[in-house]
Image 1 (tube, rainbow, N blue to C red):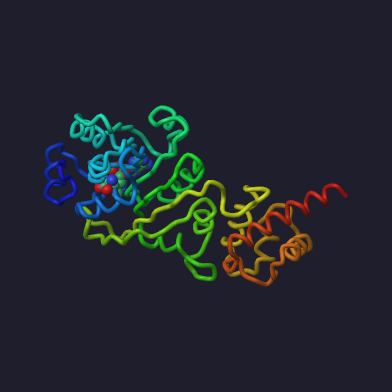
Image 2 (image 1 turned 90 degrees about the vertical axis):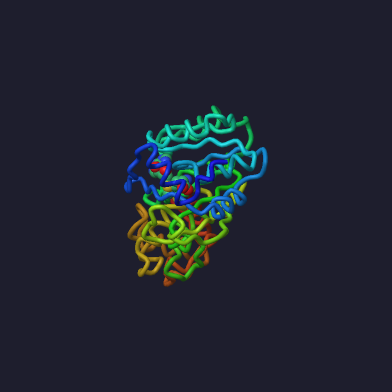
Length: 293
Ligand code: SAM
């Protein structure tokens, strides 16, 4: 073990390889080994196959490897992939992939590096500037993933865990609850990073569902309705939908809401996933019927 996750070792590695950290890529490294170990514990057990997003200099990676997991780590910064390859050269359990995680074809990555048909675990102390796009990408492959343990800005975790009717509740909450059961593992103070970021963090574990939490007849329409409801949070659901969902007029929207049993005067932010699913499914049936006549 290198015990990378400490302030002195982190400074020593950065000095040795003459690396100036790049703020743009969210390079704030974990320097508390108990936190790195806690994230590894929440992520995997011996023999698991793990995809790590943004390993940095390996602060978390070494704890994943210590738990006898096989790790594929995707890092955007070529200076850091070089460090990782040199530091972990004796580990046949780690594969370092250089590149932007958002550009990776996850099915291809799975085929190349993981056992066929086996679900993987995902972990990452995420670069904050791309938390939402990374979540969207992971949910796009939710059937290949059993769980994702992700550290993110505390406020983003609060949005994910929010209840309907609160100001934190929004499209991100609905997206996460559609594909997963999220749970908070622990909060992490900014003091545990080098250099310290401007915000505190939270580790969230997303247990991926084998199928979405609600049944919808048209997923694109479901997310269009959700976005419309939250883009105009202060409007009634009737006004928000008739103005934002293509080709919906007031009369049809009112009819769809009635079929779905939703009060048209409610605000979108008060609706839960099953309400959004009911609106979607009634809309699909109603619009199909309308086309037929
Ligand atoms: N896992 C390390 C730790 O906990 O100390 C580093 C975490 S640091 C917050 C985020 C890491 O993600 C950095 O190493 C950064 O270079 C990398 N990164 C940033 N954007 C990325 C992207 N789009 N794809 C892959 N890695 C990225």
